[in-house]
Length: 333
Image (cartoon, rainbow, N blue to C red; front, side, top):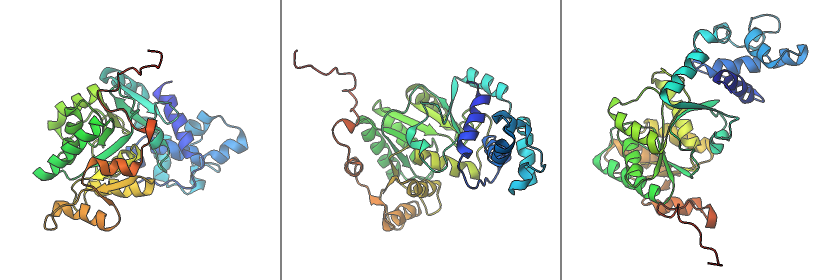
């Protein structure tokens, strides 16, 4: 299925049953106008028997049965009507093929099931790397201006989770994110980087080598089209994906208004377990984590704290590294 068809199907699926849709910048993200288009024309579809593609691509004029009757601003109507001026599916597929990237729509069996359950899942993900995200995931996030202590804790947690068979999810940013990815890679574990940019943009640039190593044995994910630059909106959107992929989120260091706090907020909205590593009371990079603990997050001192909370039992526990390839011995042998 082409990315063109996947976008139409994903927009339909996402909009079905949604009571209201409000996006800050629909023009900057091609999927949002498609969702508007589908939702706005459900009445048109029912009354006149139009096909799905008629609804998406033809019925976008502000007429008696058009989007103007739904309360959607005219600027957003124009964004939907002219969406191909902002996004070329043929060009996008060519860039994907050249970069070794695939697009996974929400209806695709490869779409992460936990992420599909959140209230506002992405309509699709670009993925670079062959890892199918089939291990339980734990996110490790924190400040870009991390202390040496914070980085060492994040790396140690990433390594220990990796050794125990968990996938470490983070955002490829400086500081805590980088340390968490490095920790998982250092023991041959799985790690996933969720970008707040198009999958072709590496931020920060010095993490190019890390980006490549993650793509080799893990996965790089982004919900944004090629060329999408980082901005304030994409930070928040990335945070909900980081949290949505995982069963638990660990905040190692963060000030009160850091990006990691957005992931912590998303974890509460999504019903994920939230852990925070305590820090010095006189250090700004610990003010956020200390507040999270005060507000009810579980204080974290070791990986066992996470495992006990998740309450993995028997076969539900991920297979530790080194035992994955061992064949079970039958009683007859």
